[in-house]
Length: 111
Image (cartoon, one colour):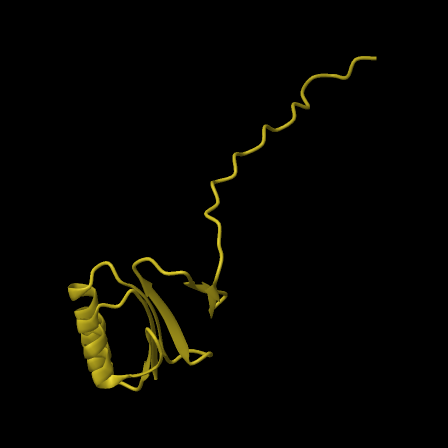
C-alpha cells in the first residue's frame, strides 16, 4: 500500500498518478503498487515536477509495517524515533547549545 500526499500537483503529474492510485481527497493518492512501479513513479514525479512537495507513506517490513519519505517542501515531516515512524506537524530547528562555562574550583574561598 502506498499513500502520497502532494502539494501543488501539476495536472500532468496528477494524471499520471491517477493511473495507479485513487484520489479520495485533492492531492492525496492511495494505491497498491509493486516495488518497481512505486520506484519508477516516485522517480518520474521528482524528475518532472522538481518543486512539488511529497509525503510518501509505503509498506515496509518493520514493526509498524510502513515507512515515511518526504521530498521537497511539505507541511509535515516523517521522523524516525527509536525505530518508530512518526509524522511531525510542527518542529523547530534548534541551534547547537553553547557549552556553559565550567565553574572554577581551583581558587580558595575568601573568609
